[in-house]
Length: 128
Image 1 (cartoon, rainbow, N blue to C red):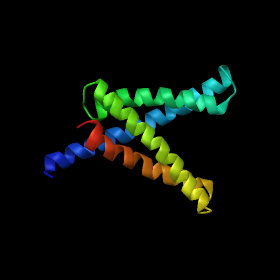
Image 2: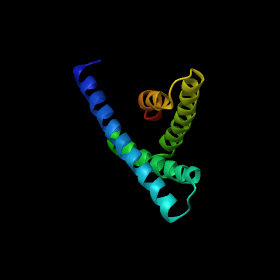
Image 3: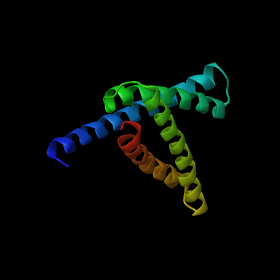
Image 4: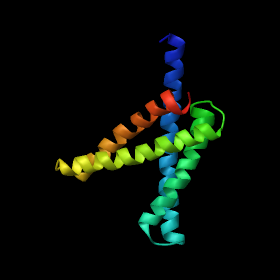
């Protein structure tokens, strides 16, 4: 990998990380607002918040993080990666529970593995 390619990858990764922080905050805000002003059902609120955050994540990551155009193909791939990430998060949390780890360690493991997993898939598949 050339120095320019390495620099571009680091720039993309930083933008991806910043976008992740933003959409995580958005998820939390949407969930709290839903619970307080629409319906006090946390599972439903988190489902709605996940959907909103995923759409915003696609828009920002496509146009800014990966400097790509909005297309049906990338949308489908992005949603596929998001679905796979959701399943991975559940699997990692379940594995931590089965191993007898504190739930906070499971959350930490999800927080470490999920962004790396999705970033790699986006680099090598979604935006290729």
